[in-house]
Length: 210
Image 1 (cartoon, rainbow, N blue to C red):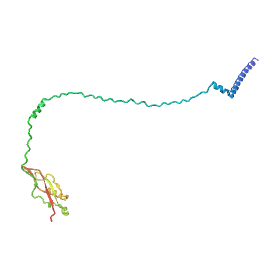
Image 2 (cartoon, one colour):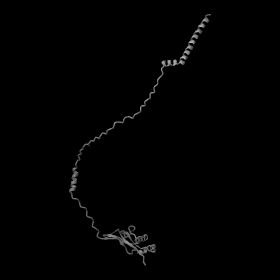
Image 3 (cartoon, rainbow, N blue to C red):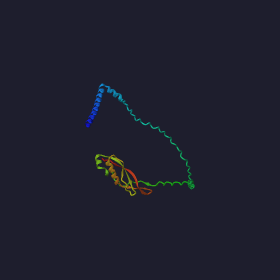
Image 4 (tube, rainbow, N blue to C red):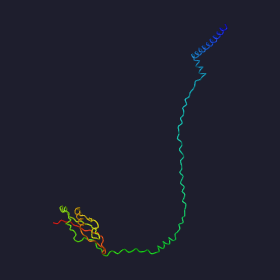
């Protein structure tokens, strides 16, 4: 019998709690429906006000320019004065004095000019220009005069090849004149009776005969 009474009290407490919860929810729903709940919420928890703050971006400004550098004027330092004592060589000065005091020797006189000079020349039985007249020049009617230079040694022979000093204008006639000069005989020149090498020019003429 005691156990039954205990269970009845337990159910009665649960019923009261349940009824209170249900009544709270009904009251809350009524307040929300009538708008009174919203006012209570606004009073209890006022609305949050937000302000938008713009962040100011700091610009990187360039550093200030460095102060101007002033050039310092160069300091001129005068060179030190150095006195150098050069010893005087008395012996040398004496020698110079002695030389200048002496009379200057005279230059030797030039040798006297030679008394007897004989120039080289063409020898006897010199070849005839007709024998060295080029045949082609004869057929073409070429005529002309050539000046040939020869150098004759002490032995009476040519010391070098003869050359044309003045051309006739025809290469064939010039070549014939050189051949004639090589074939000729010569007499050597002399100075005071001593044979020597001497050069001289002579003219060779090629002329057609009728």
